[in-house]
Length: 201
Image 1 (cartoon, rainbow, N blue to C red):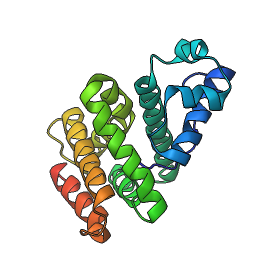
Image 2 (cartoon, rainbow, N blue to C red):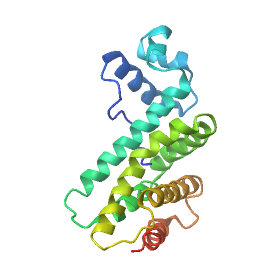
Image 3 (cartoon, rainbow, N blue to C red):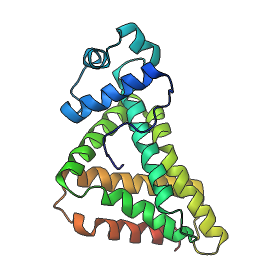
């Protein structure tokens, strides 16, 4: 998803939890994913015991960070489409904006981090990662339902189709994060045309 590296809204409102979260974001900006739990507690100025009060380990922290990025991206999409009455138009913004975030070297660096961590965590914590991505899938499902109610779309099963659409967008995002010169200029057009056709638009 759009990887503008910076703390959005950590699930914990506790001050120390927020400090740990911000420290992790800072380390990602400086070093990517190549930091340790010790680096986090040193930067945050907290004890290891305090860290473990919030997270079971680095993987749980990374899952929380990815979830935070996705929730922030979804909130941005909702804001971008606040003035659009057409569910198909909103859906198009969701797809195009997500894939449009691959433009530029700085954006690609963030996308590569998200992609690498996504697939590493998917092997170790598939259920938790699926939960982290769910806000985006739920957003798409709501528009498929609205599009069907308005007679603008004809999804077979909005929940299932939303999941498959999410996987399509994520797959394209992950692939082009590492091979941006391979047709990325038409990527948003191509993926949106594919998703719209699949949803019966």
